[in-house]
Length: 564
Image (tube, rainbow, N blue to C red; front, side, top):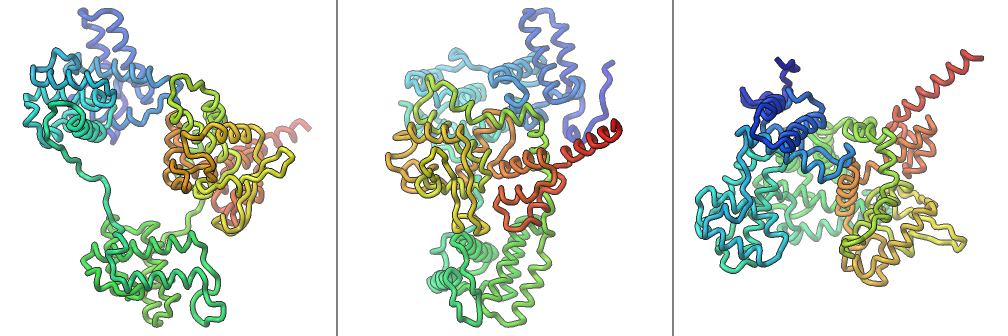
């Protein structure tokens, strides 16, 4: 009898009696009808996937719903295997589950389709469009097996397909497969002769909260513009309101937050026409209504955004010289919704940095830009290659210049990349560029300068037109890329290439980790490196990060004293 560990909470919803991978191994091994190679591959796949999951085969349930999220989180590059190898391992596991009757066998052959579907699929193949078969093959075979004729396909069939994928798939996300099938169906309707005219719709995944500014009365819009103009250029002799101009980025954030809060009130049942001015928002009763709407969306718990919104309303009451009772009421709301100041990094970021402390993973990240640039383009399309080089350049810059992603996305070649003429290249951010209003500059290492020059020499016309002044432009070249889009690209590129979870902001933590690991207690340099205005903020954020190096140094000290 195979010894098993106690059932953990994450297996609580696995149906009773579900076979384990060990049960499948035993059954496949006993089956004499298999070819030896096929039997070996299935057994090897089951054992290897169990190993990747960090469990003995006897503790891995052969249940698709249990396996899906866990296998989807595996990054082949991180465990030292190729995407193709990982695909083969999963395929062998699924084959074993199909042989044991746990999941359905897949049908992929043209001969498996009835005449009606076969005629349509022949038209699909004749187009030579690689996107359609990828999205539609499994869906079409599902519809054929279900007995649904092409002209009667409905959204109910698509929903049934999603449920079937959830039951019979072991790694792919059912939602992703469902949406790909529906999009593929609608695309085939446009491209494939004779395809049914039925349009399948997808439920929107986007929850729209912030309404368009035109939703609100003109008086509200004018009042908002007047307020922001005043905050951007205050009267230095005024007895009320701020005397220091707010930065453009702060004003943009204020506008976004104020419109968002007005939108929350509309969602709470307020007539937009009743919001005639910004002052309306700071009426304590109205402010509480909007904040309760935000709380209702968050299980009645405060959050960073709710806390910040309450703080903004409190501050607006002061800026607009509201009555003392109003200011006191809003201050009480803000105090109730306030979150304690964050001390140190989040547990998620610490976990991600812990992985990067392993030399193998750290080196893969540090050498990733050169790896991407050195990769032979071969059959890669010019735009795809240029996009990869641009991502690699962004990563290379973040590794040596831990900028905020908004600063990275906004770099201008002539203004921020300065070349004094002696071969050196500096990345320079002036006071108005940084969040703290403090200038900062980095000298780029020669290898990063090389990547920079190589990319600039090859990016036109694939990434932007000639003469584009931005280092990371939109395709039109008229403006810089949106910071969130660049951040998504960076995280996605690192994930695909290395299997590591590294978002754009984590590069700042990674820089400090490396510095403090080599220089325990070196917070002042870390502060300057990140552009923090206060040393206390740097210490609060990164205190303890250098513990590994500090304890090692202390151990070495004791060893030296013993030998003395």
